[in-house]
Image 1 (tube, rainbow, N blue to C red):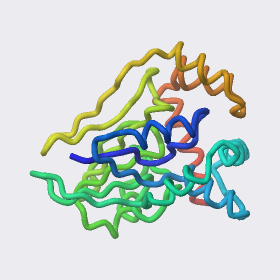
Image 2: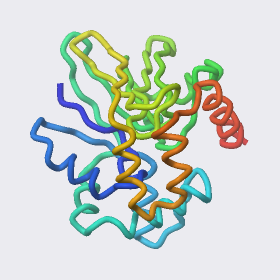
Image 3: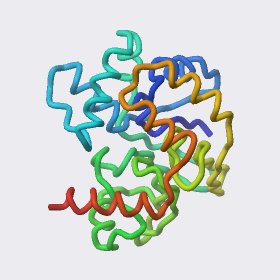
Image 4: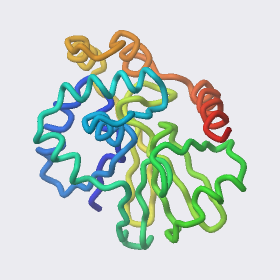
Length: 224
């Protein structure tokens, strides 16, 4: 099936190179926007960025200096959500966080009544999301919600987490790559806090437990 990134493509140390690679993919690709891209749009239009933290806002401002006008035009062709028909499954909804927001935080520990509220307007029975970076597979009533994980900022082990839908089967996949080469290239950039970034995302990855604790804190703040 056609597939593509679920957003936050430009949040890392090499945003222009990442977009160059995406543009060169010959397989049909559909991409959707994440909060990083929408924060970038707010930044370049002079609006308040409104990211998850002061650091993420700093990253957004840095990214805005790294991309060309054609890069921005390319990003603006992406949509917030995408629905696709998948053989043996039916309509599948792809979103960054939830169907109505690219910032909503929820985890496998979120109460079911809250989950029902977040996805009540989705008619699709399979929903693919990302945002929180932890791969999971949960049922919310008759709906199945799966998280593809993160290629650039995975949890549990270094490498790249992603998801493959093969007809009726969903496969959570982890791929390894040469992290030392990646670090060498990333350290050449002026990305804010690059040393911490490569240490905590490329050379090592946070445990699922640590990520859940952090996300639970953000979720509580979000709901207050």
